[in-house]
Amino acid sequence: MILVSVEFFMNISQKKIKNFQNKIFLFYQAHKRKLPWRATTNPYFVLLSEFMLQQTQVSRVITFYQQWINRWPTIQYLAKASRTEVLKAWMGLGYNTRALRLHDAVNTIVSDYDGNVLEAMKHYQQIPGVGKYTAHAVQIFSSNADLVTVDTNIRRIFIAEFHLPESISDKDLWMLAKHCLPKGRSRDWHNALMDYGALHLTSQKTGIKPKTRQTSFEGSDRQLRAQIIRLLLNHPASMKDLNKRFDVDQSRLKKILQKMIHEQIIIFQQNQYHLKNE
Image (cartoon, rainbow, N blue to C red; front, side, top):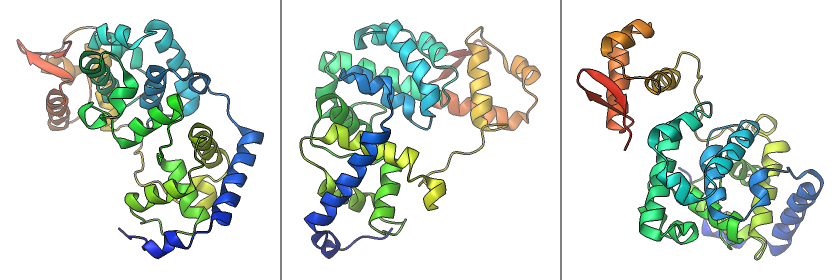
């Protein structure tokens, strides 16, 4: 991991930062995306959108987001939902463990912070499934807090615009982001950066690869996990049932099932696998 010298940050002129800001805002003014979660400052809705947008295409999230806020319009409603209900509503978004992490996060926020999402985000280390990126994003988009956050699009923009090595550390990227933040406009700034990266300065255009790359879904363990969950949503299943249903190596299937038990997604009782529903 390459660390950028302090001198690098000291040598970035205010004029260069201002020009950079103007370019991003001009692009945003002409090309801003109209997304439903941008039409609200409700911290719960923003938190929901952030979980859904992780490693998922924006176009796919829009429908699910609207369905969820219609079904569970407050964080208290979602906290009262069962894990099975949450998983059923999530099916089709991928990475089903995100649904359970969201449900755990929501329950913690309701029980420990009386449903106050913004207060909970200030103590994100105590909230399951929430890291620094999500905690800052929720505060930025719901309260316009003068914070920064760096997703894959924003990372790519800073690397390209400031001619940085792709191996730059996260610490240095976040420091650079703080240097470039226009105070009082954090919400617009981050929306603008995300649109600039998603629509213009793309990975394909720059050749800058994301830090983590999503593997192919077809034939993957992720696909098999989703199929197992879909089956168990309807009824429990024995190992014999699963072997009949899925034409895969038994050792691979057992390994996946053990991992799902460890992650508290499923349980094994009376010789059958069940979704954990607590």
